[in-house]
Image (cartoon, rainbow, N blue to C red; front, side):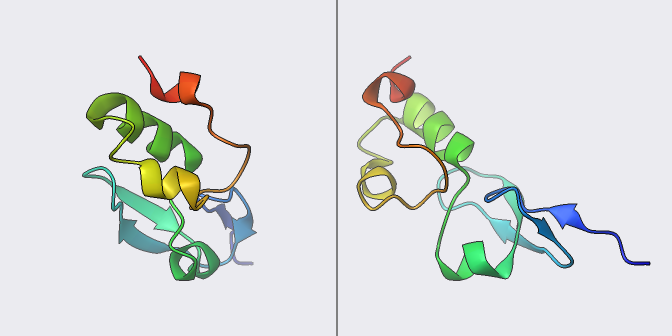
Length: 79
């Protein structure tokens, strides 16, 4: 029996994940092929990068919604 694990980005159960370096932070993520092909980053990574580096740094990810889940609000990027 093969174990299924969750994609760090979409949180969907997958049989296979690949290690992918985040384009926003210096971390490695386990992502499914769908998220990799769509150039998605986990929502929490976009928020964390926006808070640490600045909202301009993540502007393209937010405006093009390159993350799954709810819309990221300006208040979530300001610390």
